[in-house]
Length: 401
Image 1 (cartoon, rainbow, N blue to C red):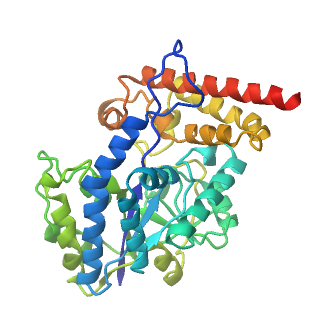
Image 2: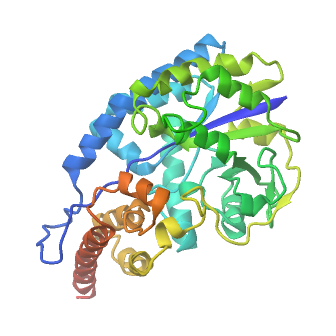
């Protein structure tokens, strides 16, 4: 029996206003609320609401055989609470079906895992409380953009999670298959499930590309590819951004209809079933240890940290963000709004927009960025951060008096 594991990442950042150094900022008004609300409402209409209905119908049509998993960042949850509560309710309905697992991550979709272990733990606990309240207590963890290494995995295990998701990068696996469970080196209990990136990207990136040799892709064809996965496959991780469906690739491409028909096509073969990550972790043991000495992610062709820390501007901004943490925490009791603003700035998208990549990677970064250039993104981020630093220092002086 081979397990098909669909996992969808749902995330929207709080995008900053397009600040320049000479701009006067009022209070902590850093966020482009008009743009953020517009995007949240648009993506909910195009993706979240229709796809959630589609998945609920798939669960009903297959008598509960279809299963999948989600992770909603804390930032998108708050945006849906504020602006599109019907969309958040539709995710709750999926949880109530009993067939959909909701994972934990950092509350701010941040890079805390590679910057500050204490902040990483703090954001996980915030997010765990949020997920538990809405969807039930999570037992599986996914880090921002699937970033992991041995140290991160060990901390995730120590925080009580049983399962974690990662990228099946070639440089990590070598000759080994991404389609079996592993145990990260140094862990005793944690089960690591990896993304089958070719099969995942066939949907997430290539589906609507008319130059792709397999275009147009139909559900029966794709199900056939799944049925042909070679031994020793036990589980096929199909991990992708949820906004793939209806937003990045519009309904006119046929991608919603593709997903509507895929579950039945997969289930036509008796040796295949859908499972959530927690089910795979509970039902299958790790087949071996996986050493992950350097961080791996699912971002860009390099699948490392260069999407966020690949140039001097990104490194400087990242260092400046986390250098402010001790000062923010020192005044957090009196000024929790400063801590909340700082945590929003830790969202990884802010340094992602500052990337200076080339070719296909550059196209992806440009697609997501609201800025005209990486330099403009850097200026906006550092202008907001400098203002926040001044507010924190002012609060420190007031506290010392």
